[in-house]
Length: 497
View 1 (cartoon, one colour):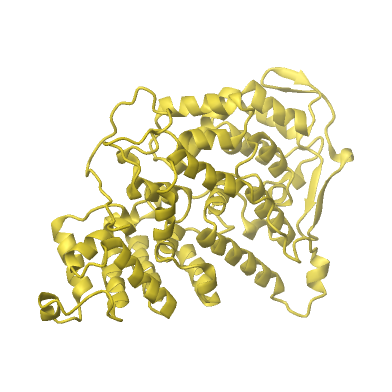
View 2 (view 1 turned 180 degrees about the vertical axis):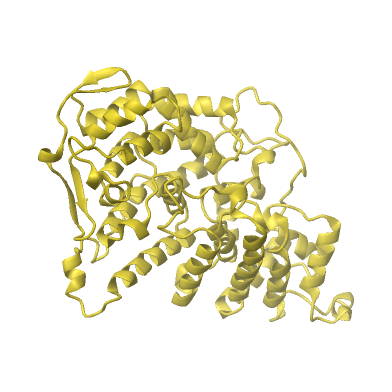
C-alpha cells in the first residue's frame, strides 16, 4: 500500500437506495477501498490492523465477509477450563480461599484476549451478553458462569430459537431470574416476563400480563442450586402440568412447545425486535424501518437462523453507506482495545497485569464484563459518555497508547506501519493525515490537524524537519506516533467507530 488513501465526505447523508439490502457493488462513488475494509472490521470486531486491510483489499466484499463470518462461526464450542464443571465442594476442598475469584479473572482475561486476537465471535458474544443478560454478582457460581460463557459463544451465529430455549435452562439464567422459585401453584413471573419483553418480542409488543402468568406456569420445575453449584435439572414434581392459555391458544404446553409458540404465534414481533437490535449493533442507533423489515422477513424465512440475517445486512449497500461509517460510539472496551489492534499487537505481547488494568478501567467506564447493571443491560451509544467517563476515556486510552512504547517489537511495528501508510514519507503533515485516517477513518478540521502535527513533531528541533534530517527511521519516531495519539484520543473523532 503506497499510501493510505482513506477519504470521507464530512456531513454526507445516505442517498435513497432503490433496494438498501441489495448486495454492495463497488463503484466510483462508493469504492471498495481501505476506508470500507476498515469499517467492516471495526463493526465486526474491535479494530483493524494494516495487515488486515491489505489482505481484505485482495478479496471482493462478499468474499471477505464470508471469510470473516464463516471463520468466526466455525470456531465451535469454546474449550472448557479444568474448573468448568466444579461444584462448591471442589472449591471448599481447596486451600486457596480466592481460587474462585482467580478462575473468574482467568475467564475474563481469556475473553479480552479473544477480543484482540479473534475479534469477531468475541464481539458477537458480547452483544448476546448484553441481550441475554445475567449478573455474576447475583448467581455467583463459576460452573454456571462457564456454561453461560459457552452458550453465548457457541450460539452467537446460530439458530436464535434454539439459543433462546437453551439459555432459559442455564444455571445462570435460572438463578438470576428466579427460576428456582417457580413451582406449581406459585410460579415466579420474572423469567417469563423478560423472555417476552427483553429476550424475544420487545416491551409491550404482542403479549399481555395474563400471557406472562400462563408462561410462568409452563416454566415451573426447572431447578439450579447456585449455592452448591450443581448442574441444573428438571423436577417434574415442581412442574405445573395443567393446560395453559398463551396468546389465545390453550394446550398442555411444555418448556419446548411454549418457546416454539412464541416464534410461531408472534413471529412478526420477534423477527422485528431481534433484527432491530442487530441493526443497532452493526449499523446505527436510529433504525431504518425498511431495512429492518427486510431483515425480519429473512429471519422468518430462514427458520430463525442468525447468519443469513447478519450476512444480508453486512453485505448490503446500506451497510457501506458513508453516513453509517463512524456513526456509532465506541464502547469502553473498544476505546482501549482498538489502539492495540491498530498497532498490530497480539495478546501474547500484552503482560498479564495489563489485562487486569483493561478489565478494571472498562468497569470504571461503565462496562464490567459478566456484570451488566441490570437485566436490561448496558444502554450503550450516547449513554457511554458523560463528563466523568469522557475524561477517564482520554486518560485510559492514552495509557494504552503509552503501552505501545514499552515493547521494542511493538515500537518497530508502529514505525513500519507509518512507513507503509505514507510510502516512507518524511513529511510530518502527510504522516499525521495518514495516521488520522488509519486510526479513526476520518479527517480532522484544520485547527485540530495542525495541533496533531505539533504533537507529533514535539521534542524534535524544527530545523531537522526543514533541513530534511528527520525521517521515520529515527528510533524516536515510534514515540512521536504515541505523542500524536495522546492528542488524538481526546478528540471526538476517536470516540466514533
